[in-house]
Length: 390
Ligand code: RFL
Ligand code: PHB
Picture 1 (tube, rainbow, N blue to C red):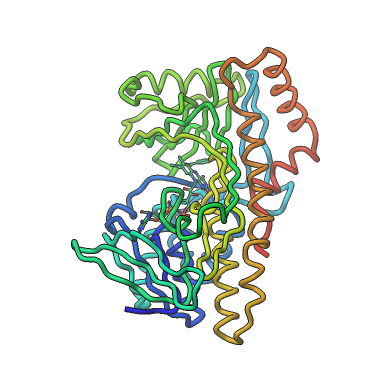
Picture 2: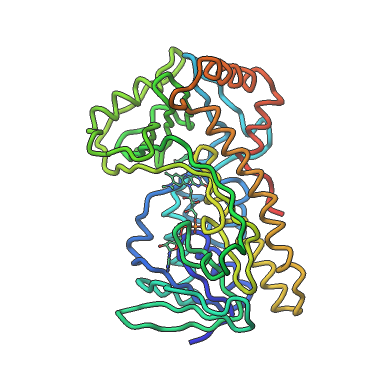
């Protein structure tokens, strides 16, 4: 089998890239290790930046998002028994959309299949061959048999644990990373969110976040150990902790309901440079990870493939390689700004183990400064809503 662009991974990065390439008339094939049902139900992100929303709308996959998603003009910071609302709309003219990542994935799978883009599910890529040559190959296993897809280009959209990065010789990529000494225990519950906007809380017992999926479903997280044993967290303990950490005399409290999903996520920052090796281009989590406090991961993946699709389309139209050669630099500038923002939000809002009293006081002073300063609040709002796609 052969194609122009072989895409490894049917997460948001791979599926959106396929969708954008198909619209440009560039043939591609997507190869995904998991089943369609698995990727369509995988619970992850929930907040789309303005730029991501605009891109989905402009390319014809925004209809269900506009119907079912929740537009948010602000977010709340809660600390030392008070709440400060960041008015994103007033400060930036922009907004964010609460719409689950797996709903975006469903919409993109449906659009790709309807347009005839092949997506091979339950096909695990075992290696990429000759990435630096003219005709690289993706080797994968499906139904117990090995098969090969020859391509002009390969897009490594296979997430943090994917295989594509290994296609470059050892030492080719430089990686930068930081592992945080905590994780998030996340839940989904049948309960209307007590606050209609997201609440990020820095509490003596640790960080907590109240988010949502629909007007009837609360998404919430509590800071925990990175390797937390979920068995130690019966539902009553989760609700008790959320109530304590999200409490404030000017707050809305927490609404309880049946918890139907629980999971623990470790937190890290990670960047691979450059994001290209020969004819292999990395995009999304395969190239970079951010801690979720800034809600940036999915949005960075969308921006990467927006740039990559434009560069590949230009190549097939005119043969010009300049945009492909600039791919890594264009993406990395936004990625590092998002790395800084995600690190900053994470550092400001979590309780670090064994934190010195001085640093705890400094954290609250920082939250106070951001809240009291229009410039400070605007900096947070601009980054949260996201800068326009270049
Ligand atoms: P994905 O989604 O991991 O998809 C990679 C796909 O590649 C497949 N794969 C392979 N396929 C074939 N052969 C192989 N050898 C393969 N190896 C892997 C995998 O099965 C998978 O389908 O990466 P992608 O597309 O780059 O998308 C990135 C996003 O998923 C991620 O950045 C976000 O979920 C991060 N994130 C958030 N991002 C936001 O923008 N806003 C948020 O509010 C937000 N909240 C979050 C988050 C991530 C979280 N977790 C669970 C890490 C909240 C959480 C709790
Ligand atoms: C979510 O709703 O899952 C969510 C929201 C905001 C974040 C991270 C996750 O920063």
